[in-house]
Amino acid sequence: QVQLVESGGGLVQAGGSLRLSCAASERAFNRRGMGWFRAAPGKEREFVAAISGNAGGIAYADSVKGRFTISRDNAKNTVYLHMNSLRPEDTAVYYCAARNIAMIPSRQIEGDYWGQGTQVTVAS
Image 1 (spheres, rainbow, N blue to C red):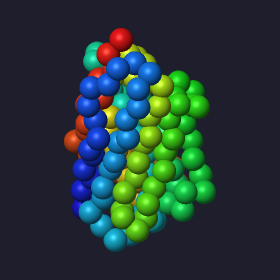
Image 2: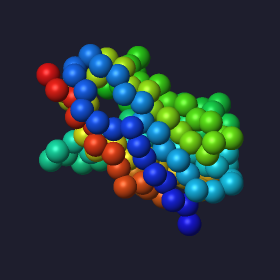
Image 3: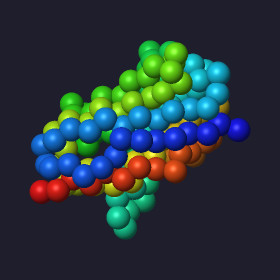
């Protein structure tokens, strides 16, 4: 069983930045594709960004391309989401997901383990 713990959410003004972190509780972290998803109020969870086990593969949702950057530090069992130029429509609970294989998880069904989520609120 893999435990994922997100941190770094909060309240920020539009145009601001935040960095989310997701720490995993295992040693085989580099064998897992990792992803970030988000759920805005009243909406379904959607894909944001994902990174493969060796960071050779990266994908982003069109809505965040050029503003968000996903990265990972396998030595620290941690994946990050750097969010710049935040907009009110980025307001959501952000979830970290881990996959049982090294490929990126770009759909909810591909997330084998999930964190509890961290709230990001962007004020206009």
